[in-house]
Amino acid sequence: YDPGRAGANSQLGTNSTAANAIQLSGNARLRGDAVAGPRSDVSTAISVTGSAVIEGRKRSAYRAKTLPAVTIPRGLPNRGHLVVNGTVREFAQGTYLFSSITVRNGGTLRFRGTSTVYVTGDVVVQSRGHMKPTNDRPTSLTVLVRGERLFRVEENGSASRQARFFGALYGPDSEIRLQGRGEVFGSSVGKTGQLEDTAKVHFDEALRASRRNGPLSSTTTLDPAEDTWREIVPAPSG
Image 1 (cartoon, helix red, strand yellow):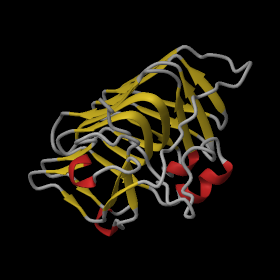
Image 2: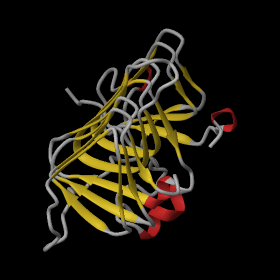
Image 3: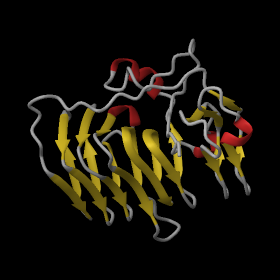
Image 4: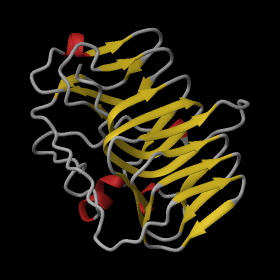
């Protein structure tokens, strides 16, 4: 992945029509469109301040996007609270369930092949932690978070350090929080979203095709006929 060759095909969307439903500030840059809720006034629903830039259009969606709740497969064993602290932990290709996941202090959590991970608690990647598939392709890892939880990628160390997540995250009731130099390579779907400092989301366009047959196929695949969005981080409605 070369950030210098990034396209302008990403989309940031929300179902909300409230004022400042989407806010970009500081040095934030959106390489694509900002999409507010149906029949919204984009002049008030989408706010751009400071040196922030939207390279695409400001527009409203044709209709609200339905985000189904996460359903965990019956009989899937719960592996409990997973903490990877300064070490490397690797799992074979498969489907997993955890109570929570924490990766920190230079630790790396890797999944082989194409894997799906269900989580009933928070997912935190921080302090040079990495969570990813072994091939570094976001299409190979899907993380589904059930309930009102927190997904956080945070890096507040030196400028040469990053906390990173590679994959497709889906948590329709969760808060997504990227802080410091935290980075997401893939996509993220949540109830609320917050990007601070120089945190980044790099949308992987290969997810468009892979989602058609994956666990997110009915929730996040772009439907060109309906002009809905590929990547959604809804803002609070109140």
